[in-house]
Length: 287
Length: 263
Image 1 (tube, rainbow over the protein chains, first blue to last red):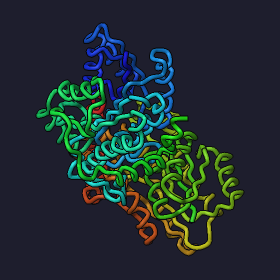
Image 2: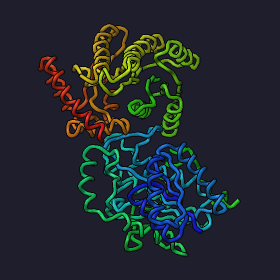
Image 3: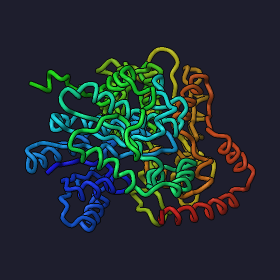
Image 4: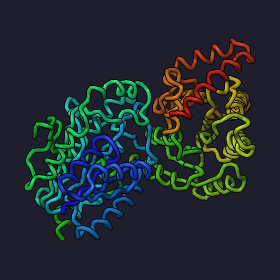
């Protein structure tokens, strides 16, 4: 039985991805921020898919210490159930902010949660993923028409909430590109998903201000989260890993021209520095 | 130049720490939360090439504060700037709060700030010295349901204004920051959201407030009220008789608080 870890699994796209994966017979480990929401989501999923094998852990992915603690719990669970093998990791948890807000490390929220949290979790679970594992990022079509704001990645000179969001989604694509670049030789495959406009609560959770207001109106035009969940199920369920980096509901799409080796390497370096970690090269993973 | 920041692990403190590090200042950070200090210390060290020292400290305790300055002296640190950020408020009316909570507001916002300010002047580096007090837009008004907090912040503003004049010959520059709402954490966001439109327009962005505060104290300004709307509010507040002002504010806050509880 294939095991898949899904972050941000208590609502929206993450929840539906869990449901779709359970239906296809995967074992799912869901992550949520609060114990209460995690419990509720677990119960609801049991109701939807009674035969499904679902476990939930909770923790705040904005805190690197909690990401690490969750990774330890996941590894223990994997040892018990699948001999340590993780078939796929879905880095889906994300947020939208109207104002410049920082994590305890002083990092901007959208970059920290939408990109760095997944970066760190992937690093921690990399040994379990090698040899055939897949990493799927919830990116967005909005990563197009966007460049990395390298001179001020956290938008501290003047906060532009939508730019910071789009940049974090470009980071997802670049991270997927970087993972493929480095670890494809070991059978790891990474993807960025463009779910389209989806009716979720992402812009209504502590977002505030104009961005929260606009999202409350915009989300009504979105599709049900079970629609994009099909993309994830397809990428994870396929026997051989599908080609292409960026996928939407119709299949593989071209990613932005910004998604290339130079930006990917630069982002890897920056993210490693911000997380205080170092991704091993292929050699170190083989030994 | 070393900058001493109190309440450095909180939302505003972290933004100030980032701003100062970006300007190339070395940092001496203190907060009541040890783990919080460690985290912001890591974040700053990873991003900027400045020296960062941290010291966990309860500013309401004399011996803790004495220990902090002993530690600074041992490390050969002399300060060029103090940012008095540490402060506390407990939401709810006078009768809904315990007496020790109300006293804590005074002990931290007023007493501890005086203690730090008095002490730091003995540990100044050569050259000009900069002092920043974090007051609030609330300091201009009688604020029912936030009476103790607002009064503690008016103390700081009045005190800072007078102290600035007194210390001018020593080359000390004093600035009082009087921000409206600041989106420092999830609670602050839900508070701002509960106030609706007026919450949004009186909210100041952290990155701008911190940058301009530092720029202005360096230029010798004595007060900084960020945001045009807040300026107008401050002006209007000066024109309306205070008992009437208290009545208006009570109506507004009791409404906002009711809504807040249902968010």
